[in-house]
Length: 315
Image 1 (cartoon, helix red, strand yellow):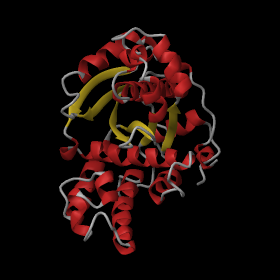
Image 2 (tube, rainbow, N blue to C red):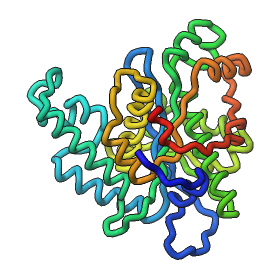
Image 3 (cartoon, rainbow, N blue to C red):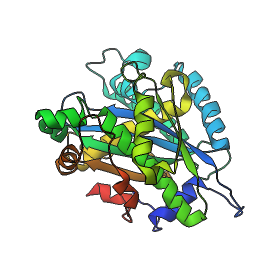
């Protein structure tokens, strides 16, 4: 997995402003599509992430995504269903509990086609248009810590809210890094999946987060929700965050024994700008420095300085 030897911030600017001719750009809004992926047991990782995109590439992704859905005769793409041979992908396996090598190869091939499209969404234009990222909470640390009533009252019953907030702050951080290179302020608009459990509380939590974190809030524009089964960019975010979870499991030798080809596609296209995780140390600090019901104070993340190549994930 090789990435260019360029600065992290320059790489991010190249991804989000892929100009051949050095046109002058003015402040604009970027779409940040977010989804979650997590291990079913209270172990592994709870990951939120997706892609940041602007302009024509958004429409090209939708158009070509629909073409792939028609090709495979499915209504939507969901990475976990493709991996397990269930839901939309049940027709590709005889028994989801005993997937054969041939069936596994077929499912992997379908998943890789969608990942290639994310890496190269515009036909006849080889530039990289999307910036992919993901941030995770170590579930074992979260659930052990939340056995204590105070920590549970602060962090919640699941890592959902904290991990989404971390991802949103990291997206705002990416806008700050662009400002350093482009000398103008852009902002990010968040689009998330409207799951039934959180649809009523998520918007209010977003605005509370923005008010609480003023450094990040300058780059945070709007929040909305959509049905991922009807939204191609959210399906793409699902594919991205699924691979981020898998690569973190590979890094920590948690069942995954090799780097998946899907993530290798992203790495080869040089479209991943951030993968990170929070463990017991960070979670303990958050639990100790908040009162129950408080929005999370995460502005310190806006000072983050990262120069390491994503190839470090191999170690």
